[in-house]
Image (cartoon, rainbow, N blue to C red; front, side):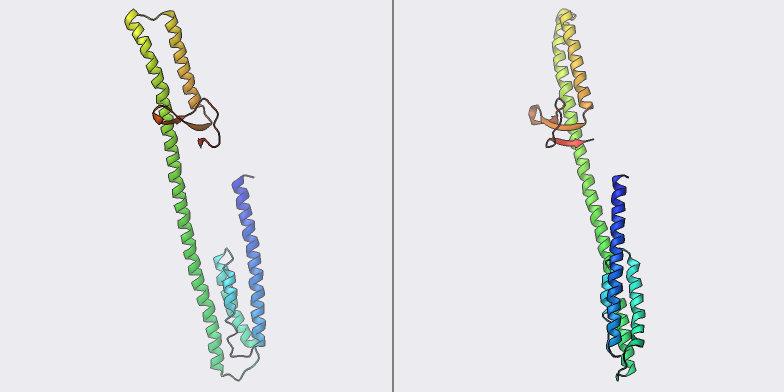
Length: 232
């Protein structure tokens, strides 16, 4: 199993565990509110505490769970009406209290879901900003390594061209190169080629200071963690 799959599976298991915990908590609190409603005379707004159940449902990763909880709480408000002890309060007040409880339940559900959506949008925007910052940092790092590489290549080729001047003077003076100079030229070409090969076969990049206080790449030594500026 790859690491991303393992992480996704753990996140999925965590969400499932969270959902089960929220389901049980909401069910337990709703049952308590219903029992209290059964013991409270009609006319008391005993259905308002169902708001707590709605708020607890927001811990679930599923948005529709909050709507389901609000619907169930609405039904329990009606069940509480039929199971509550009778009261001397006029029936219109009883219905008004029950209606108010249902209204509070749904207003809470709608407002909290709207707030949840807003928070989610802000979170997604934050993730986009973080991703954009990382992309900029990666581009800057690549550009930095590219510049260091080009400076190193210029340093290698510059040394090679400077050494060629000596052979140029000998050719201008003698119209040819001596066997010893030919060997030196072959060694110079081979050394330059090896330097470029080393630069092109690096697994890690470590910077070094060159002439003129410029930053180049140290291709002669293995990179250390504190000096590494890029990895493949």
